[in-house]
Length: 229
Image (cartoon, rainbow, N blue to C red; front, side, top):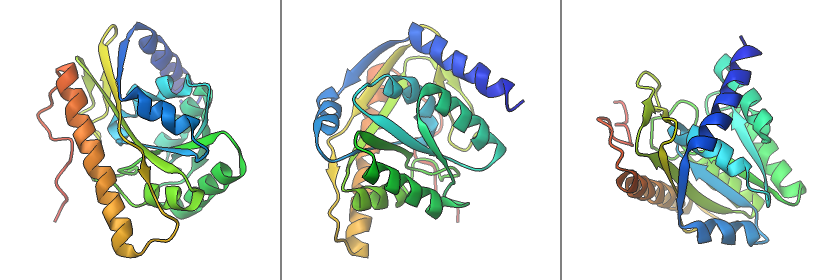
């Protein structure tokens, strides 16, 4: 299954992507981030990964490094992402996450032309809540956080998954949006790190509302899940 499923998923993503009509909002933010000397640290919601993967790996100005968990699902996803051209490190917010983040930081700092892509709500959620890893990544690489997200006018919602993964139907209209890059100083105290984390979260929630409206997408569940008591 670990050989078959990633292969099928890879070709499915490629085939679907060729049928989608893609429109971008805020493309100048992406172009400026890729043209800057500082590495681009792309931040997106976990449930929108499939909408962004193929599109982002088609960009020729940057090599992306991402993180996948060490679970069986993570192994399958890592193989898909590697087929698409990403460099993948293994770990998650719940397991070996610190070591994986350090590996990503070292790679981005040591390899010119590398950027990082992080699902900001981690591998377990809660959905739509930005965790602190992306702030630490930008802080220690000198990179700038680039909020990005996507939506579509019609598609499948995987309602049993914690992130409500969304995959557009064939020939769907896909909206991709990029927010203003967020600078992260090297010297930060805890309150400042929390402030930047909130800024990233607010930017992504606003971007998600924008692309959902442009696409005409709606879901009975909110983008941001309630935090369990």
